[in-house]
Length: 245
Ligand SMILES: Cc1cc2nc3c(=O)[nH]c(=O)nc-3n(C[C@H](O)[C@H](O)[C@H](O)COP(=O)(O)O)c2cc1C
Image (cartoon, rainbow, N blue to C red):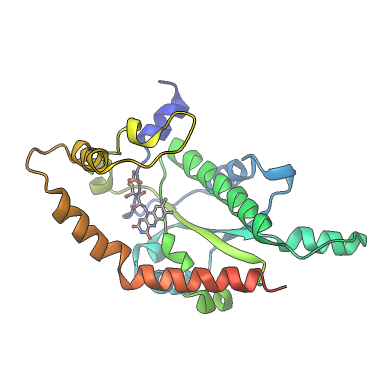
């Protein structure tokens, strides 16, 4: 295993941090690594907000389904899918152009997410842990106000970074589904029920694993949760506003 592959395998989400600061040099490496990610047409259809104001960190911790560790993270970055910058350039140059649409939005999300993941891997290589916060998609109206967004600029990822505390270092990484269920040859196909059951059984590993109870509890706790419903409401509002013109 080379150092990069080791960093990918060893990375796990870190939600509790030591007091150790992230140095300016480390932060610069994390940010510059993000900017080195591939980007469609070299456009860099994203903006990264480096959240330094403690009050904004605290507001994000509340808005993102009350996750206080967000406010305790020494580095908090919001990755915005940003279609504004190029619109402004087209306007400045007098280039006949159209309003951004669904494809532009998805492309900007791809750009922002690959940049985010570069930053995560760079942090890992420096011994700095990180955690994505999906709840940034919730509460659109509050997030737009807090971060001064406009309708073609969407917060697609929030990532927090810090040195892992001892508990986090010791905590095992959650196992993944086996590759055979996730990597398919040539064409998509739906897994049948037997495969689905096996897939969960293999990931859990225990003989007495109860698929039905586990999946029912997960569905209730996550998929049908209040925060998942709010995320869908809020995300639909982002998309509706984006596509308005
Ligand atoms: C898009 C995305 C959203 C996530 N949102 C949250 C979150 O809001 N809170 C949290 O504690 N972890 C969050 N995570 C971390 C996942 O729970 C974690 O990646 C998963 O359980 C696998 O564990 P690992 O990252 O340690 O390998 C998120 C991860 C991703 C990729």
